[in-house]
Length: 125
Image (cartoon, rainbow, N blue to C red; front, top):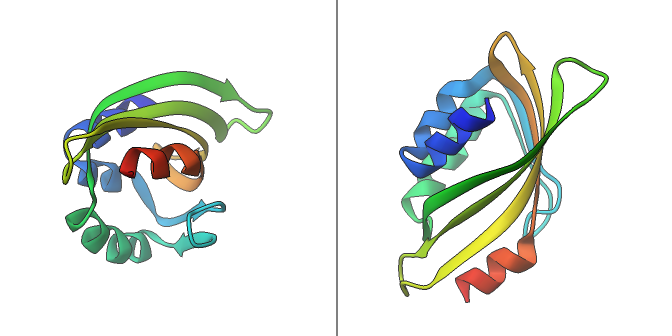
């Protein structure tokens, strides 16, 4: 699953949308500006479409750092790093993330992402 997510970030970010269950719950507890949550794939898509159009970074590197299994066979904790170019300036940056994923029937049913917001802000200048 994590490799397909990485391929989506590097190619077509919308490819990740196909990995989501209809009733997915996506959360970013420490997002800049406060916690964010989307209940259901359609809720996520309503946010992601416009957000992607104005996204200031083009990702060109994905590194899977670790995958940790849990006692719940549906849940894994993943550590990864995304790197890319800030489209407005040509500057480069990277940031690490931790995702807690619940996968059911081959689809992501839950995704809680913890972002390195300081690295993101530094990369964006």
